[in-house]
Image 1 (cartoon, rainbow, N blue to C red):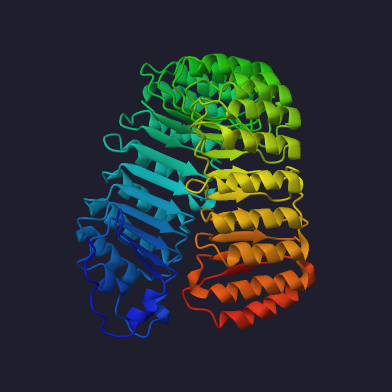
Image 2: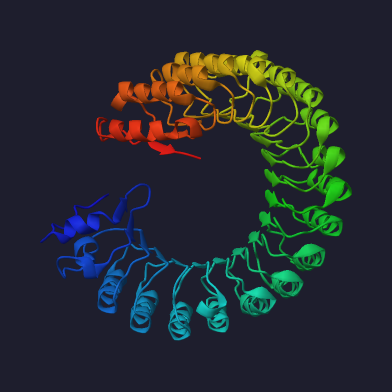
Length: 571
């Protein structure tokens, strides 16, 4: 329950209201952002105003320019509070040694505190050691260091601290710290005694093969359920070290593994397949942006057939027309598979495996009209009744393929509840857009987002979409940028969508050749709706009318209700 805020004694209350956010549901949170006490008209501390007697579960210090005495008082209140369980310090510019001594004392003595995050902290070696010593005396369950660099981090000090947290810590994250293989080796040694550790996230840390070898030696001593080693240049050798270490774990408890962006190829893919076979609890796997190829894809698919995997990301893995369908196991609900070159043959094989799929991303897979028609046959099956998010962006099918897919979804006896449809860079033209409009008309309750950017839509297609949305107001986000609909199409959008819809929140119309005539229609439509419209952001960007739109909207802003917050972006 939100408590009444302490009554302000002076104008400082108004000052700090500009940089404070209160979030009360579901967890009360206090966010202090960009507060500069030296600019305040009074010395009344912000802590007296907002923490005394408050019940906040989370405290976030976002780029505060605190001086030591003020932070010391704030930390003192944190210690006495029995509700704050999470503390985040982000990009802090404060007097270092004395201030961090206050933070250290708070970490050691705040009984309720279970999670601490340091993000982009500006801190010297001496102060960091003080923080590390405090961490080692705490009972934290989660520790995160984000976006730090070696000059700001004393790796040895923090690793010694981590090693002393064996009875409590369950989650550790070092993200974008560029520790390199030597730093990771030190971390691996400190992890070996953490019997309660369950989640380890080490992404963008430049681990390499040597760091992977050190982690592989540590893994058999741990009981990890979540591992994120994304973007670490592991390559095949590093992936092999990680897999070999995990295979030696006596307790096969791994539920989630992220190895995206590690430059692994076929050999690494084969090792991943071995790990999948030995991981009966695995439900979430991300190996995207590793060029493992078709043969490794087949091996991974064979391994996945006997698992209960629910989320799989294999985008940019070069799986080809045989490998990509092979990895689509029966249990998968979220399948991200863009940029794999599956072509029409792969699309046809995938079409028969769509039962139970909730999210399907087949973008940039060289699917033409033939492949799209094969997908349509799969979508028309009553077994494909769960699909919610569907992306086919940047494929080579045209109006015929688009019409086949959309018509199949419309006509099926048990149509899937699609909420998001992405057809960006598919040349569906006005013919396909007419079917898209019919699709929109039949999705009055579920459809929320439609992307038809660079689809060759002209004025006729714009008219069809505008009429469909004007009659069936459900879509909140519409992107029709980069389409040659011209001034006539812009007028249709203005009259049919801006003037008539209430649920539309974001509308993108960049580079559609609207000219001044179309821009004027849009400006007039915005003004006519005023506060009745739900529209909050419009993206415009035609060079031939930019000056007109800027001036028109500048004049319009003063006449609109303060409740209308329309953001105009020129690309």
